[in-house]
Image (cartoon, rainbow, N blue to C red; front, side, top):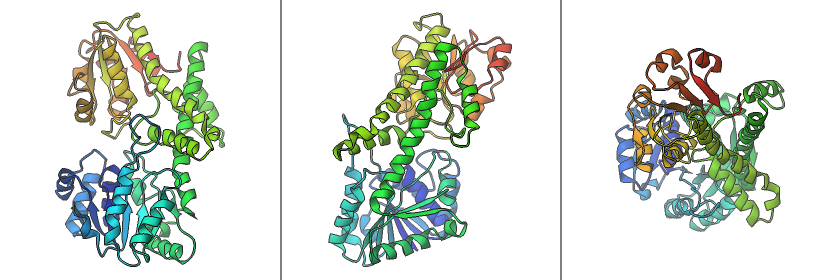
Length: 437
């Protein structure tokens, strides 16, 4: 099938490459010339494992190309809208400027029978409004909503082998035609018996934000328990292990620590609250305010624990920060708890030397006042404390004895509860973590 992907950021670039890998003819469209040039040359403009190889292989087949000219979308069968929906400045609501612009720009180039497929995370009610724009421009075109469920660091795998597919379709024959198009696009996944949920626009929109809200709530729940564990001497990791054996609860996402960040969960739970308020259902989601508040408190707690490790003062102390991305296997520093803590430590008088395997360039752009190293060892040299804030494998696998020979003082804050406390203490380290004695 001939497919366009409008918006070649994180979501769009991955989706375009994966659709070409599945055998479709794909045209990626974006207004950013530099991004298009990089993708056309097979270079991913962000770090995502497996994507550079996929871009190279898909481009070599001739099935994938990129352009800034939206008029080239004319004649294509299906059009994925994968632009960003950032948080409005000074508000909780989502900014739909880019989604509206993408659909409006595409509309004049739609052919009869074309299907416009939304992938962006949007407030409920957006799809039905955009369907009117599509119908006004081309009465024989249809809008569908097909939310994404990508995990950064695993986005290629999640696109090629999704754990479920959701179609938001209009009623009647138009919906049936759109479903046929989507079924052809996702034929490989459906042949592999990927679960499929077919529903209306509003349900599809709410599936995505509900999933993100639930994950955020689960993370904040165990971090709330960590707050209680801190004042009682309990071990939150053992608590999570024990309750995780309950099949109704499960162990995944019960990892207490610094909390969530990135370009999805924080903005999406805030936009969900804002939209519920607009619809008169704000009381239903008031708990998400506390979910957000718990998450933000973890950052301050990490700073406080670092100060405690340094006997009550950060002034003039050298602190090695390991990890700046909001999660491992990513260079994404959007709303990163790790980068926020590093900035707070510096603001409170510490001399911060930070290192991340992938995120240093992005961190430099946001916080040029920080000092950066080219390795964990360089960051930790003669440090008064080491603060592990992103659980990259290379940090989890550090040898506490060898690493102890580098630092000035053996103080470590495990901000992700990913190290073995006994091993580090046996090597002479003063070990602290969030929610553990």
